[in-house]
Image 1 (tube, rainbow, N blue to C red):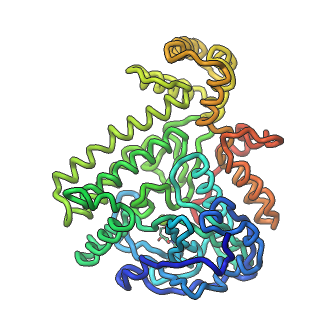
Image 2 (cartoon, rainbow, N blue to C red; image 1 turned 120 degrees about the horizontal axis):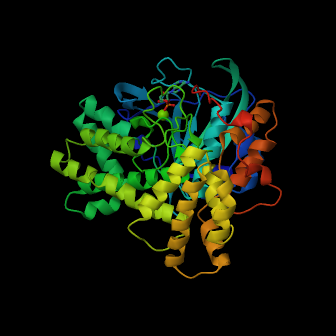
Image 3 (cartoon, helix red, strand yellow; image 1 turned 90 degrees about the vertical axis):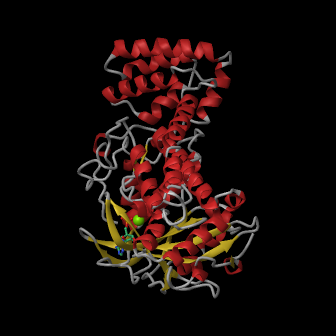
Length: 487
Ligand code: AMP
Ligand code: MG
């Protein structure tokens, strides 16, 4: 275990130079204090969990102090927002403090979000509010615990700094961690500003640091792009299988590592709804739940366009062609597991689609359905779940097909089935209303609910004693919360 002043820095992105980022010092928050910290993320830096409670922790991540080896830099990038190109987007309120490597030799970017203005702030104030910082913290750690690749969050630091959104709120900072903060929009920036030399440097940087195995391939850049396509197909399959709606899939929010990145008005589905739109400024539903699949491909095409100086158009098209079949295979594999199936049959896709249609029509809770399906034998479980459906005849038909399918699947005990299904079907997810409760308490100075919720969500598959209230459908007030898009 290390003390806070023993972190080891190796700032590889900063060394790319001023064409890629600008040196900016964090603007300190007033009266910085710890709201919540992630023990699991602290462990990635070999830090003892107790360090989070020390005053110097809040000072470091609240912008008051810096390590001598930190090199705070605001990164430059652009991107497509809602389908239209914006020549310069960021980073308007984020600072890469530096890259720290742990005893296992892994590099982690330490990134402050909400640390004040940068040369890329445009009309913004460089700040982030407490509510959006808590949401990012909870979501990134919860996704990770579900096995869905995501940026991580070390802590949220709250403050007395006033920040104006629709009303006056308080400023906060999330310390975000990732192996890289490079987005599709970084490549787009150098492509559209016609800076081929810098773009080549960026491509080399990403290849060397994050896709070294692609070096061995005859066309390393193409191999790297293929890998990015594959990772995104796998990521989005997980979002769809677990009901995660990102909400703002602009290309500046897409990571070159294929991890969930940049949290805004995201939501996990409560009732299953393929057409769900979590972002209230998304009037066309561009980023609706089911559209995430084609939008993933659209975003990869935008990245492909920016890579045309390095890779032939035909090769790029061929690589893009991998996306949909890979997505479908990954998604079906996950859904089979969620249904407790261990083998594959041709009709499984239809079995899943029919179930989702029934759930959609009856507004069935997406998470609890799968959890309960694994509670007991298939026959007993479907008999008990039947009441949740309006179209009883439709559900009965599905249930007969499902039971027959389970019988063909294999011979296992109820206990084996439960263990296997509960290991992939969470009991606890970050429901919007749960986040909202935690935020309301935190805004009045009580951080215990944020901490408890974080704790519960860190073991989403394990039933935890006394935590029943976190495994319920939302109450009426919490069903259709409008999450403010300002952050
Ligand atoms: P987002 O929609 O949160 O992904 O943000 C898009 C870009 O706008 C990012 O580069 C952000 O850094 C920037 N941005 C968002 N909010 C602010 C703010 N309050 N001040 C400055 N820049 C911001
Ligand atoms: Mg963003």
